[in-house]
Image (cartoon, rainbow, N blue to C red; front, side, top):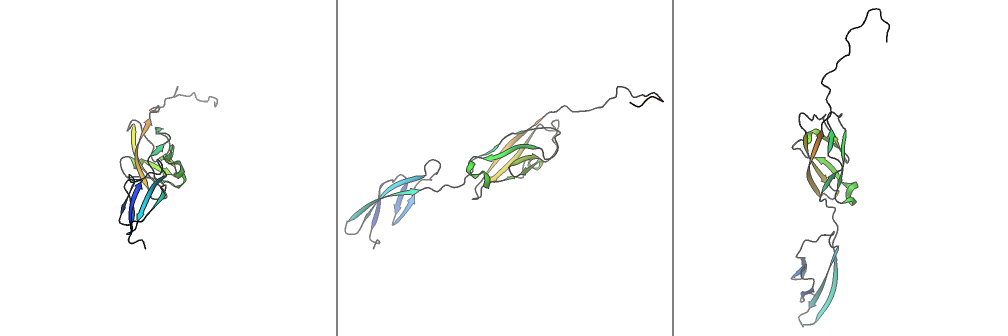
Length: 178
């Protein structure tokens, strides 16, 4: 019968605490910095007899997203719709296959399209109208964790064709076809 036992931590008390007959964490664990933590417990019964045992508590890795990356953030003006701007990835490469990228409705996001992991143009950009666009992208892992980031997309200037001219606008009658 363990109802008459008291429990104390003899090592590992910086990370854990005992309340009654339950063990609780005192810190937030991060798998990437430490995948396990050790502690030693002493169980003492009402007669004063005690037993000491060490435990290893394993930290479970969650599919967290800490950042979103875009391989390129520039597009030349006057490119056709659905021109690829760049490829999207997340900070945890183990998640890449299970991440869903989506546009967040704000800023200039309505001018873009996401196709799987590719950021595409949703309009034909005009440098003279606006040389930079902002797009908000949300990445969500299969475990439901998400991260949102704003990207500045630079619109590069291209030489605009504003007029067309002919070297000559006359032709001789009855001339050969050239």
